[in-house]
Amino acid sequence: MYRVKAVAEMFDISPHTVYRLIKAGELDALKVGGSIRVPESALAVFREACAGTGDDATAVEVSA
Image 1 (cartoon, one colour):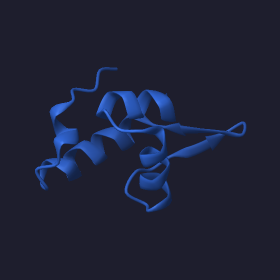
Image 2: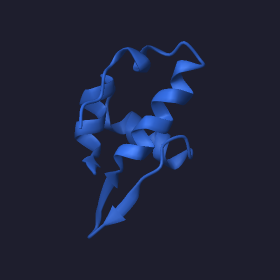
Image 3: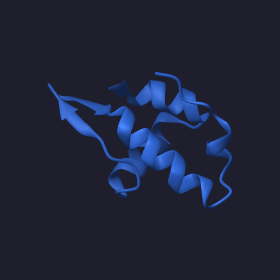
Image 4: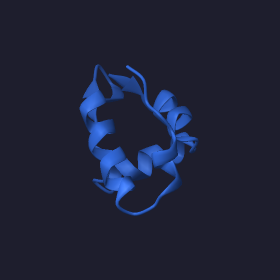
């Protein structure tokens, strides 16, 4: 599970953008004790979705 800030850093985007992706349903997330967490599996799905669009976010390697 990753915090929004960590996801933003991985993809070189702002935390606000991560929240927008979650709200738009483009990135799955869970609420854990009042905090938003993004599962690693959701990052893999998001990365694959970006790969088909040529988005720069795919250039970032996400490590476990």
